[in-house]
Length: 100
Image (cartoon, rainbow, N blue to C red; front, side, top):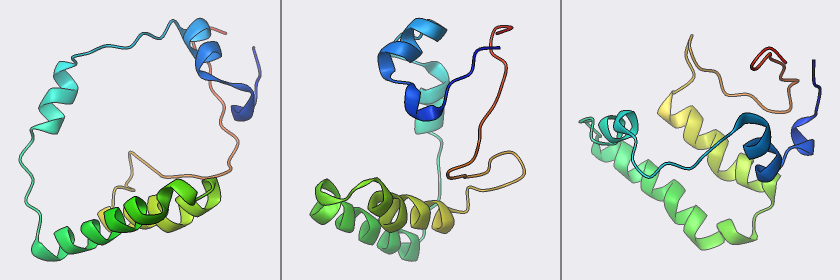
């Protein structure tokens, strides 16, 4: 098994190891992007506030500030954590890909 930490990977290594290629159109993503979703006025306000903070200060944030000020609050507010998907930070991630 090949072992590497997350920090050891860069885009070139990922492309070479997994044969990744950029695609311009993806039917699944297009369906997901056009799926009708009802968003309340309150939700629009909160999401707009998150966006405004990111626009005003995001370029100056480091990784920890971005995670704490934008990513984690956004994930918590949108309640995307569930039995199939869980947001995580600083955990060991391991898996077998292509038998390696």
